[in-house]
Image (cartoon, rainbow, N blue to C red; front, side, top):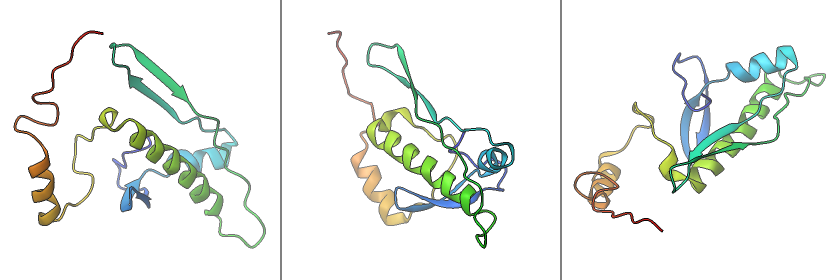
Length: 130
């Protein structure tokens, strides 16, 4: 899972304008092996079925002379972060973190709590069959 740095050994990238720790290992492995990385997302459709989206491969290019060794790795990870951001922005209800992901200021927390209806984000929403 490219959106969870569970080991704490990743790097910090910007996700939705906030510094976010994300795993770097898959990109390091791709750099060493030459294997492509395919960003894949499985999204639930309104009718309960699932749609699998496979993006074009991300390849970690070789390091150029005089370049930092991790430059291509970070560049490839940033391409993934852009795809992740776009996917979450287009399908915000499909992404959920089970642990604290960002530190939230007390002011922002109060604003968010005012916007969420009692019982959670989906409370009071009635879905009907089309």
